Image (spheres, rainbow, N blue to C red):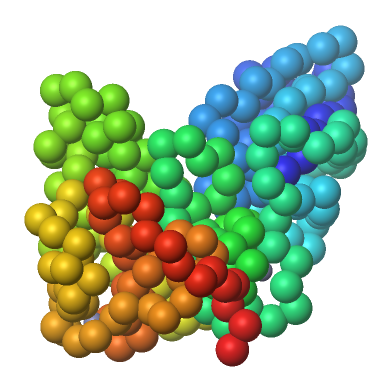
Length: 266
Ligand SMILES: [Zn+2]
Ligand SMILES: [Zn+2]
């Protein structure tokens, strides 16, 4: 991911409040479209321009070709408000994050995030690197914002579970049960991603189990079919059901199981 600065010059002869609102709406649009990541996007007004400091998934995230129809129409309001064209400077890499996927072909994608993740909540099935949400075609225009909302909820539930406080059981149930409201929402989004983008898988977290034997023998919770993977995928997933497009791991409370690991290569 990259740290970037956006500058938007303004004409002082125009209404100041309208300019601020137009810029704020555009920045909100950039976030919903997946061009910016992170909750907080500071906007500074200087003598001659607005300056926005942000994290972007890729160096070209703020290029017009990644904007889609919604952002283009927000941009078209600039001239009338007395705002000039965007000037974007990529300052450098964000050292705490991973770079985005650059695969030419993605066989499948995975809806995936965690309380630690700032990256877009979509991963490439081939390399497991993040895929920016602006890569999703415009044909389902609300999908990106709904994925961002789901990811916020997921991170909150994951944090409840990890912090082991008042919401521990609630958080664990949400991220580990296939029929929890969080999983149901995630699987619906995954279906929509499959129809407009690439075959999309949903990940079910798993920590607790009764025994190693029972764990290795467990079946897909939706269809009851076999889903154990002979080779662990991306050093993370031990179960994969292609019928239900569901992934999971061997319960983390077992001692680490020695497994041959592989990326997706077939
Ligand atoms: Zn990739
Ligand atoms: Zn299944």
